[in-house]
Image 1 (spheres, rainbow, N blue to C red):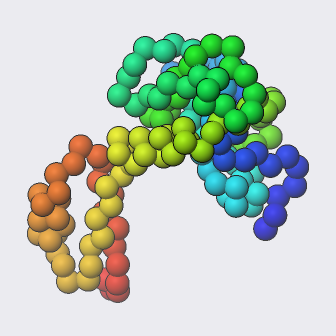
Image 2: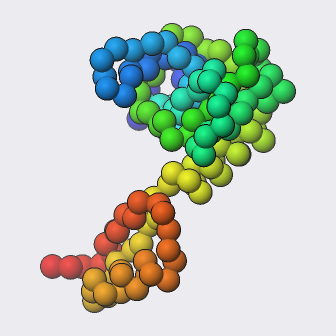
Length: 154
């Protein structure tokens, strides 16, 4: 299925209404599109990470400045917050703002994979809960753990 209308591209900075975490209100804020172009072309949604002009260093943030821009100009140095991930309708985008260089986008992907992503353990048929526990103990992690199932369990 190909969707109609404007398609936003991975690495693009767009302006979007972002709700406060308590959902009490919202403000227009820049975000970086992280979903790939195939997904963006097929779906009505985009997956984004938030940007903020608060440049206080946090574990889940990357500094971005005009040197990191392939297109567009930032008014202020900003932080990209990879711990603030949203899935939003493409139709609520107010405007396109700029485009990040691949090098910075690769840093975003790396930070998501090392700090935010789930550790996935596949449970195979006949493995039992003990094998899941052993897998978790062999590779300790602070990431949330998602256990998937493989094979016929019925």
